[in-house]
Image (cartoon, rainbow over all chains, first blue to last red):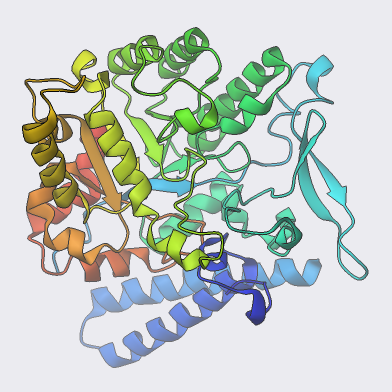
Amino acid sequence: MSRRPESERSDWTDLDLLTREEAHGRLLAEIAETDVRLSELGESDQAERELLQSRLRALREAAEDLIDHSKKN
Amino acid sequence: MPLQPWMKLLSTDDHLIEPPRLWSDRLPAKFREAGPRIVEQPRGEGQAPAEVWVYEDRVYPYIGLNAVAGKKPEEFGLEPTRYDEMIPGCYDPKARIRDMDLDGVWGALCFPSFPGFSGHVFLDGKDRELALLCVQAWNDFVLDEWCATAPGRLIPLVIMPMWDVEACVAEIHRTAAKGAKAISFPENPSPRGLPSFHTDYWDPMFSAAEETDMPLCLHFGTSGQAPKTAPEAPFAVTIALFGCNAMYATADLLFSPVLHKHPKLKIGLSEGGIGWIPYLLERSDGTWERHRFYQNVNQSVRPSELFHKHFHGCFIDDRFGVEVRHHVGIDKITWECDYPHSDSYWPKSRAYAAEVLADVPDEEVHQIVELNTRRLYNLPA
């Protein structure tokens, strides 16, 4: 969400630029959702499974890169 | 699932943040000091300094956000004001492609940020020679660097030196020769102090757009006038009414001479939704039927006919618009993502589009998310 304090937020402030924190939060949420979908899939659909695993890897890498950058700064 | 995995999502409304050296790398040495450049400004104890654009002697407080309407000046600077506070996909084209891949998005047409969505900041320029070079530098960055990183995926949109229509014509032809696909232009030039659509001032530019087959993209807000009902009204009123800017632009053009004089001109309504279109066309046709006789408007072509010939719109989450899509015209609808603004659904834009389009036949979904944009913007598959 916005870096602005809660008291100063409005819908409009959330139309602003996606911040690192917000992007990171969205990535973590998507990772969690993808994890659930993967576990629900079981071993039945191998092609779908591979797609989800590949997406999960990419999401995790992107989330880690955002954290690494924050630590560096 | 109507949105099939093989359909490529093409967004007609995304944004880029200009990297710090965009102008200093491209302007002649004598203009580098006066041209846009990033400088640091203190932000208070314990905080890294803000990075702001300085152009001539003016400071522009946002590097990434020009969506400042409704904000008090004292609120400027509370949002990210340093490049290292942004996600790199804002300003680095390789990172953008990576973020698009995560989002399931194939292509994106990106509007400017610091120059304003239609490049109007350069209207402020005291030195017109420098302002023209600044416009050309932005366009060259987009063509030679941003879009060149991923040809066919990052779609080049260019801005105009709007203070000089002949310079606009020259810039259209120069950039078209380099591969530009679209032109950003104010939804209404009049509030910017420029001649309106009801004059013949822009005719040479519109002719150049026709000759090069590039749509004019009218992003909402580019008139500089946000809908506002009262000084005390909460900004929610303005936000709720933003689509009205696209309605104003559409009615303005439909009752102007522009589309009658320029039969091949294409108009893109960028970020305004589509659900309002059937109502406005019905209302405009009714107005034309009853009131055309005593006004200086075209007497032979119905506004709705003009709309269907010239316009297209886009949506992110306009479910009503999707429901009335046949009244809008399936071939008039494109999809938008709005990355990196936080009202985008990144990194699940594709999943969200699939949800919004779940009840739409596959063939129509393909038109909306990919084929219409390829046709309108001349993007080969």
